[in-house]
Length: 252
Image (cartoon, rainbow, N blue to C red):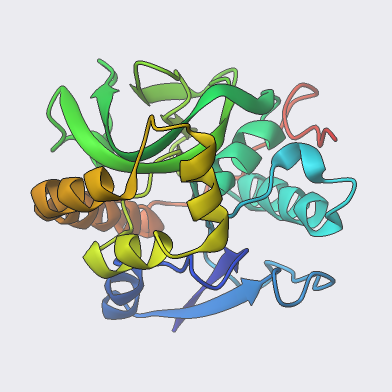
């Protein structure tokens, strides 16, 4: 059975709708929850891929949260091995950082159902996307698209929404993995309640709930198509990547 490593930072941000798809494809999933076990130092030896999920912390907090440095080492190792990599939200920021980009607090946060625009780049994971789609966002940080990566999506506020590096590594700032229950659960999490308060009325719970009713069906369609194509990547031949001097440089 193929094994895949999944890095989790908080209990309420799991694989979501990607979980049953991976299991149906025959994967054995190993969760590493750094929120519960911050001193863990897992190895990718014997694993076929790496998924790094979201969390409330920032890449720039690596000095105080050493597991973030280990995660970046794991991502670099996965890239060198040419393993499929998927970074979601914080995971996308960590991937971008490993590839040499700057991750920083944005001018404003993005919370709820917001538009992202597909770029003109051709990519199998994005082939079913309309030019503009409503996706679920929950972040304050942003990043520059890494050098040599292909930008796949942007928003009105941030260019760093989705990218591909090589043929097997993807970063998605937004949350395709959510279903209705997950969104409603997130609205009850203290950190997220505080983010809504900090937005000073720009975003609110009632609008997010209404947006969920309106857009979750399409989100599930996109998630199914996107994640199915990601799973297909595991069938591609391995071509180990030699990271140059400007890539894989762990910054803190």
